[in-house]
Length: 344
Image (tube, rainbow, N blue to C red):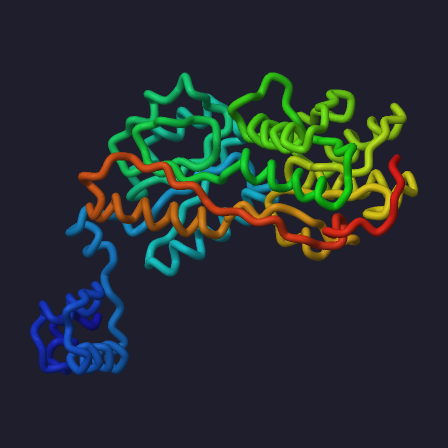
């Protein structure tokens, strides 16, 4: 026979309601009472009937996470951080990939699968500002990323412009003056690439250095191959540059590979900086100087904000925009003090 709440209450010498309060982590329980109930649960091997509890509460105990592509290291590490934060809060995460495709993102928002979760953390990539009305959904929703602003949903994101400006200023402070950029997207102004390029340009302007489109190279895909190809293009054209700003870490790692193949010394001749502070950045050779944009804070804040909405704690609050802090992480590919002169 399965152990019931009645059995736990009888062994602990308390009411069924008290057992329920302990299981649901109700705060106003005397420590001695809580200890007796927990001992009874352990002694009897009681397991809560989550299905019945969820039916009573109207909740599933699960949240959704939608990201463009788990094959991209940033989204894989973001998903891991979301899962970790959700587990600490006692909920599970159902992860879906959209491929960054607008139609798939729109379908996901209205899919019957949403009934399997209590809310959704959604990193849109294909959708844009014109789709803002579609985000007025009947379930708790937290947005990530830069594609849509002023939506009827909470939004947790990073300070792309300020962080890219800081990365560029860091290189300038180390003595670099010809800072190439790899990974721009033609025509992008409000997306991630456009915002980071804006920060780069603002830092150059503040330092009195002219922007040179010849050392700004686009890359449609933010993979290592894209960073390597863009850097080889700069080298093949004979452009002079003494630093590379990869608009994400994988682009920067690809740039390092291309520079090493061309026997350009990193960082002596060309410094390299990335953006995202992936785990891999610490262990590349040379290790990658980068921007930590607050990924763990973004994940934890997104989970906490979503669960506040799910549990009704923020029901009367207007949608909030929450911005993560950032920091430049100095490593070997771009030390703060320049070792030697020389440009390539």
